[in-house]
Image (cartoon, rainbow, N blue to C red; front, side, top):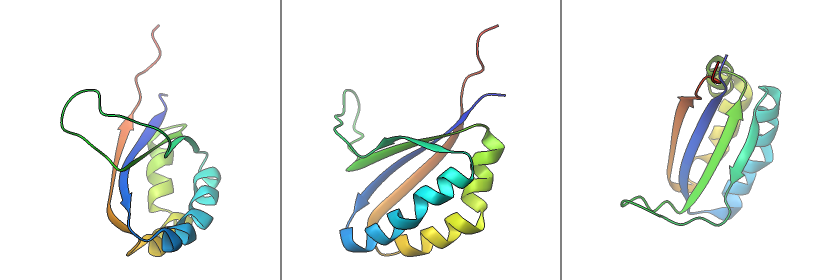
Length: 101
């Protein structure tokens, strides 16, 4: 079963409020079997018009586990703390490629 990835682009407008979200989100990720691969950090646009302010990427063992994380009670509670803390917060779930046989 291939892993699944959450790709997130965001622009934080209220860092203090966003800290409340980040105080809860990592525990929800871990409880669902996920891990952060990218969490902010240096980035640059190499092609195209995409210029995200901040990027995060998370990996989960499966697509279903990533969906369960997003829909789960722990992450729903964390998302409430994110309200009003970002100008935008876009998240895409994508299933990874199966390993070659």
